[in-house]
Amino acid sequence: MPVYFFQHFFGCDDFVSVQAVRSFSSQLLQHGYSLLLFCKSRIALDDLHAICRRKPIAHLVFLRNVILLKLFLIVVVFVAGCSVPPELVGIDNPDIPAAKVENAKLKKIFLATTRQATEAVGAFYSDQRAPELGLASVQVSIPPSHVVGELERPKRLPPDPRTEFAIIEPTVYATDDAFVASIDEALAALPKGDRSILFFVHGYNNTTSDALLRLAQFAEDSGFRGVPVLFDWASAASVSRYVYDLNSALIARPKIPEISSILARTKAEQYDIFAHSMGAFLTMEAIKDSVLAGQFDEADRLKSIILASPDIDIDLFRAQLEQIDGRVERIAVLFSEDDSALRISRRIAGGVPRVGASDIDALADLGVVAIDLSEVDNSSSGSHSKFAGSPEIVQLIGSGLNQNKRFDRFQNKTQLENLIAGLPIKVAFD
Picture 1 (cartoon, rainbow, N blue to C red):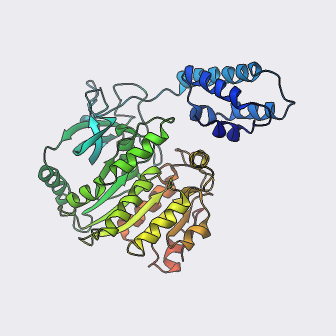
Picture 2: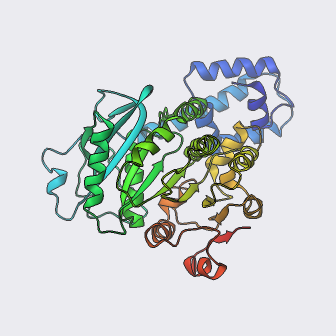
């Protein structure tokens, strides 16, 4: 843990020596505490800032005891009420099978993954990186009591499909052809005009269950009529393993052109890409590489790229767009200046602004459609996932995907204003 990060973040460099910080950092690590988890506690931060405003203290013991006490309280609350939800893949309720619940909806989700398969109950795929692309599908059961913008995830097993999401029927495809045939079967069941694919790339700190549930909830609440496909890269699903996730995203980068070529063999009429958080970073890197290799969207079926809360360095994003050089024109960015997760990411990145928490004019000047969600305050999923947690926003995105009213620069201003009428959002583009 960099000493500078600790001192800069807490503003305590006036009275804590480098040696003392190193000693204290070691004690924290020995106690098994994640600095990032600790930093998300507003109570502990307020106490630390109050201490830093006092006169210098002679010993680190007082500071250590205050912090450890707060950490103890955080851990108690975390264990008591915020424990990690269970993994769900392949776990049905023997007493109340999901397929037999009246008015529950089954949504088939296809996935391409860079994770290693695992026998762990409910996991399906682990946080370990696989050398080859895995292909699979599941059925996600959406409860009849589901509320738009909510994700009713079970806190214990087995799930109750009458009131909670469940993930059943995991299927692994041994060949690309089998995967393509199954997608084509799902597409053929849809009317012409709706035979599209939504390619969804999840973000940082996700398990396979996390990503499947989010995509299913988003597809359901948006009313997306086509076939959802998840790109499930090897996130560690741990707040403290940000760098591992970043490297996993880079390792997965060459696999996006691979799955793109597989999907190009389907009978889909068109495609849309939706990428969230660190998944947007992975997506932009893969698009840049494909463009430079002359292999981007060779079938000419890609209609839009939507980046939600992109965890991308603003300077890197500018460089990516320059390398793409206008060959990808339909890029929309959903951002929010109050994104708390990206505030932490910005600190980790040395203070460089993140695209997903940027300024509307700065983004519009880069040639993308900038969609400002800063005033949206009804997201059940917090400020970093307003695209799915706000009922109005998730339905707005669905309207765009289903009716070709996409957020792009080729629509005139009146069309865009009509699309967002009555919503607390702003749209700008060059």
